[in-house]
Image (cartoon, rainbow, N blue to C red; front, side, top):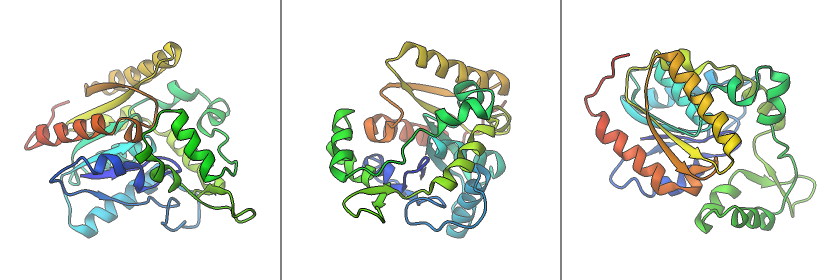
Length: 260
């Protein structure tokens, strides 16, 4: 099982999920520019991250994996499944990847950019982050995964800052907004499960459903939908539901090909 983290996080975002995947071989890493991975020169895109994933799996000799990605990681997993079908036996998109980004965030990059690049460039303390996690009802065991997104601030070592540099986040976010998930999904012929956050905001929930329906209708595909009460950070908020969805998908996907 390959677990791909989202924007500005690290492989540890799936810590709580990985603990529940008993008896499964789990592979995960910090994607380029994130965590402890290097930051290659130039602009970064979803396609770059998918090529990185293919290189990792090729080097490890792994094929027909169950790939689960959260947010940006789901978009990476979708592109990987479309471009390298030999590597992906099933795909689980956790609150990302399948939403049409222009329906979800805005038809122009001018409109989408402020939504996709929320101002996270403050330098909080670890205590502030722990208090935030408690305030949004994350389990205490999720705090180390949250803190792993940060490193000591170079100006004030009492504070921390995101490991992903701001100058790399912008191009990566634009690449995510530019991706057309319907075109990619139409090329994927393995089982796909979507684990989706059922937000308590009716307006936001309606937009999410429209963004998903746009992709599925345009691709002429159906996927297994699992709507879970919670916010965007489901691997931390609802690890049992995410792990259950991935395990069920793996069990269902053995020897299965899907016609489109």
